[in-house]
Image (cartoon, rainbow, N blue to C red):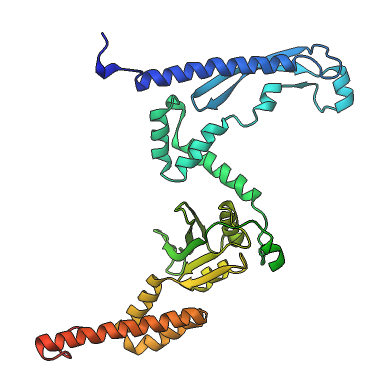
Length: 339
């Protein structure tokens, strides 16, 4: 009897339907592929079969057990192609990666955003993957994809600006400016061997387009051999052109400043207000060190950033003076009250 509660397919029924549909489609496609491989490409003579074995192919909608025949090379193939063996398995050669690209995509996407265990549970909940799926598989596939992407990344170099102003003027009209925020921090190992070991610096950032879409990046400073290339690739993936304006926001530290140089001729480098305010707070907390701290901040900034810091200090000084006056009118003695 049909009720409102059981309208449509249930999750279990939909998963089973997808698994069976995938099984039928994959078997049909494999059968057509093997039929094309039965004859020699040169003389069209049918190849002899040595036997067959089964291979496992993991797809988005279930694990497939497929028959993989092993065929003899034709005599003309053996002479023309100088094959090292007399037999070959066409299906095993075609499916060297035993996991479908769609499944690898989902494993990498979720495995990079949440824990491997939660990714395992999420994918097993919505896809007909059954007990063959586990967190170790996601971790291994994600690491392999990361290593492949790392090998495809070009070599790092000192200068990424290409062309001259005349070439940049002939480029298409660029999008609105990009805004890139970069910061660094130190991570401490939970089991350090000594007080000096177990610390490493991590640089992270986000590149935001004018429409609000963003891409994040991050790496371990000192271990990553291609940090500037990695940042340049992120900017290029967002459509960056040499005639497009880019604003970099950072704390002005040496590591993050060097990362931003020579990526774009229209780039602008600013100290973000958070770190300016942090420096002023430290100056206020310890007046004896304010000059030392201010010198350190100004040494790594350009003229415009020095002016920003100076204006910020003046503003903070005015705010403190107004607070002192308010306390004086209320209590009669501003020096004995916290300002």
